Length: 602
Image 1 (cartoon, rainbow, N blue to C red):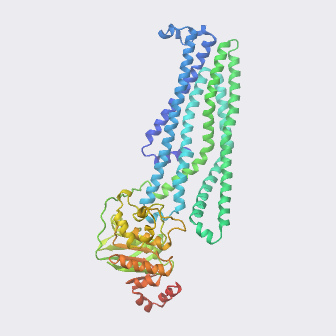
Image 2 (cartoon, rainbow, N blue to C red):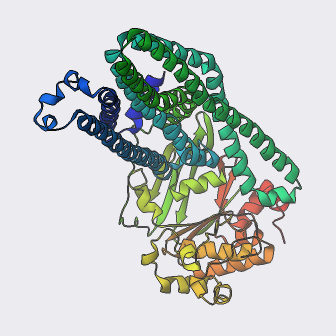
Image 3 (cartoon, one colour):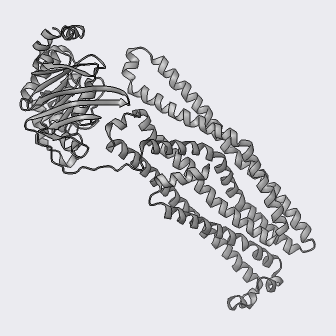
């Protein structure tokens, strides 16, 4: 299971990293070799300190040119110095290894986030609607980090420490075969035993943590994004209790994970002490009467155990916590597959020219559905002439916002055609069409940036045309607000509830939509939340500022509808008719009733 998920993870996200993973394996082997040599030098060092006369039995060091000039004690000290130097080099190497490994994991997490954010930005808008904003935030703030840090980092830690354990144990087996075999069997049985004991518990814990993490993310997102509504409906207790209860459960499960993750050091410590006693007992029996050999052997065993203990600790910790990380990895892999990221190729449009729009936009038999066999728009056909002020009206669920999204080019129809001056829109040219569009939504998200950055939203700061910003501030009648700040357009407006009014925000949104001087302006119920007077003022301002623009508005207010020279009347996803306000009111009693029920009449 682990290997299959790891292979898929590397296949999906490991482009350009396979060679680096092999490099880390090589670095792990080098780390193990350092441990092997460092421990191996302990034995001759102790032998020579206790029994200098045994210099001739230690690999005939006395016959080598350099060692021939040294006394036995000098040779012993030199061997000890080499062992110390080796340990220092090894520790410096391991610090460097840890740094490279951590940087590698962080960069990998960053690139995974980049891949998903790129998909969210460049994929078709219709596909983006399949997951909530909360889920998108969860992927890029929690899931990828848990997958790399909770799984991949532990896999790499397991591999590194496994290599160290194998090489150190191989030294023990080579030098003390009987004692080594006894200890190896004992360690293996104990490590497997504790993993069998805790495997099911930790796996279930991992599933719970994955589920709770998603729930907590949703609770946080909903709570923070709806504080005003929560207060208006006096349901603070409901949301606080939901946050607290979810947090309590998550905290409890995290405590369990911390508890199980904290067990290995104590278990390994007990295991190491027992192993040390076993090794010491066997070596004592085998070297009875050879005190120097016994002491040197025991010193080497202690050094080996000293190196084995932390490595076994990390191995055991990785084995216990891998199931938790595996759940996050599998979740990430599933999203990769569901989104089709393997075949996704972002199209980056740069310096493209807007599509020419001089005559009209034609919609011909437009069909669209979010879910197969559940059409939202059914056979919509009508024309929008240059400089028209078109209003789209209908009851909730009639398909107004969907039609607006189609007209913005956010989504292409499932069937039918949209023609702009005779050119059919498609995936290749729709971005050129969007270059002609300014969009104003119902609620503007004012950035905690200056007026100029809010108006020139999406334009690099160094490329903002300040004269254009000042001109638009004056045109949308925001001069009084902007000039009330000493910094003018460079001021950062207060974005809290006591900051800009809704009317001021809508004016700011209109200025933003006009900054690129588009030919078409689309309003998605942009004035529905405003009072009648403010809505009337903004409509008149639009007629003045945008007299040479084509305006398409989802609207309900009478003043807006009367300003339109053409209304598109939708019902249940179908086009009922198009015409003036007076024409539709006279021909369709239900249209007049819709106006009345919506409190549109003054």
